[in-house]
Length: 141
Image 1: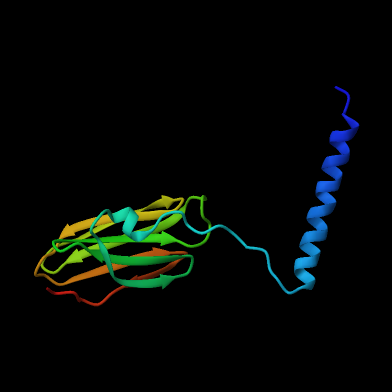
Image 2: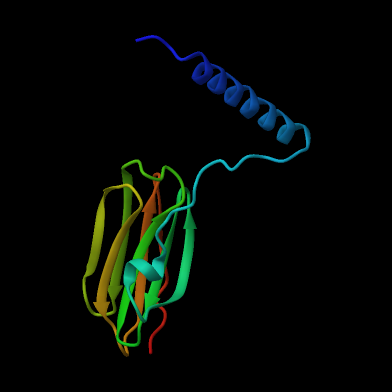
């Protein structure tokens, strides 16, 4: 199939323009965005009525604990390797009960993990990139 000369010229000019723009940004001290942000939020994953109580940053993710007045929700949102399946975990324990976990190779987040917790203390867990975090008991009301 013959290549259209005008189309080829436009592609070459577009490529040259991108190189010039990137070079200008570097000379001006402006950096291009490294990656897009996670399109999901902790409140969006847990659902309507939930509010963030606590959070903890991990390498490549943030673990969140949310509450809606009767139920606690935990989600671990990735901040790097978005769209690529990597191991992340979200966990929740209500005082007097067992741990509940969601763990796997996920592209954007682990969870939601939900348990009824009104009037009981809770603790949450997050894992990402070989690091984990377990909170203290809190939010006991």
